[in-house]
Amino acid sequence: MTKLLRMPSNPGQAVAHEIALGFDVERVRADFPILQTKIHGHNLVYLDNAATSQKPKAAIAAITRYYERDNANIHRGVHYLSERATAEFEAARKTVQMFLNALHPAEIVFVRGATEAINLVAQTYGRATVSAGDEVVITALEHHSNIVPWQMLCEEKGAMLRIVPINDDGDLILEELDRLLGPRTKIVAVSHVSNALGTVNAITDIVQRSHAKNIPVLIDGAQAAPRLTVDVQKLGCDFYAFSGHKAYGPTGIGILYGKSDLLEDMPPYQGGGDMIRSVTFEKTIYNKIPHKFEAGTPDMSGAVGLNAALKYLNRLGMDNIAAHEAELLAYATDAISRIPGIRVIGTAKEKAGVLSFVMEGVHPHDIGTILDQEGIAIRTGHHCAQPVMERFGVDATARVSLGLYNTKQEIDALVRGIHNIRKVFA
Ligand code: PLP
Image (cartoon, rainbow, N blue to C red; front, side):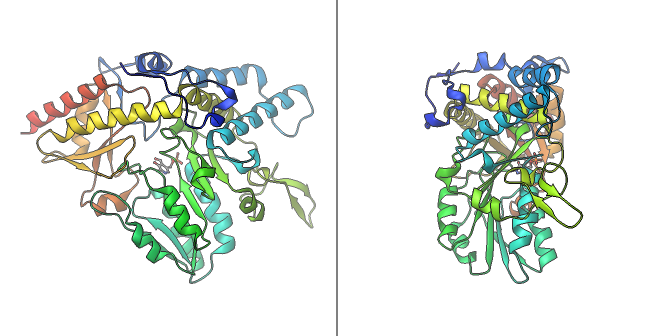
């Protein structure tokens, strides 16, 4: 059992001044009720964390508490419960601000998830700045969520989508980024961690190269926020998107961070209540940021649950979580690569949380289905990253994605399961 007692690298980020309690995976597992579930008579081994993570009691309890004690609509009421619900919602924004080390809570916009965050930027910043003949730069590593919104924008505007290629390891070829960044480039959108390969991209470097040409950068942090310390000021990025449900929070809530000067200048996203200061039939005056981007009743309980989840992560310490997952990833990669007939897809210099592979003569779906019989949950398919699959000449992979509660014993069970599959198909 690993027991690390390190403090977060940036103590200023420790939410609500909570002190990292250290990391004891068995104690951590007790915080996740679902991990006690038996699947087909076996202990659940949950290795599909990149799709969605399981929820700690603290987040589940916070949502229940919110509905039992605090629920009312926010921002509009003068009554006690409305004020209390508003305070809870805005407290969640403050926690996210500190989690990302953003300068100000107004830079945190609540959305449904990473997908909506990226669409918001494409539909507001993108529509306002991209014209015919302009270019949007993305990479060959992206999830469909960071491809399709830009493709739609380019189609609408007659602009061009340019793609930074990857090498055979799954690393971005950054010299190509330099070549692609030109006077017509209006934005660079890149993932922090690839959900299909686990590649950790050199974000600071990418931001510096882009900013040298005055081009803003959006980071899709869906896979980074749950497993790495994210400091948007250090990264220097202009936008950062992530989903609550992958970061041990509830579904239906996500975050768009944007630098305040950019958010101020952007047109609103959707129209409706809360995003306005005043409305007449002649003219609407929009609310200040971040409310300008939050039309309608938001997911209040989702924000409350996310608040509790992020505080939980901070109590464990993001550095401890990253170190735990790194140890498991190295252990799993070593064991799985030794199995005859296995090809690991994605061998980047820096990886986090994700191990994709294919097995000679066995379709990934069969691997997933057989492992499920032993209670082991992995994901198989194209992982919403079909261009990545195409680049590696496969139509699907089996993907193991780690969470903070996984153990070496679980990896051993997985490896035994894969050995058995090999025997059956040999
Ligand atoms: N970006 C990456 C890298 C992802 O892995 C995912 C989901 O798997 C998304 C974006 C989309 O996240 P959501 O479906 O929560 O909006």
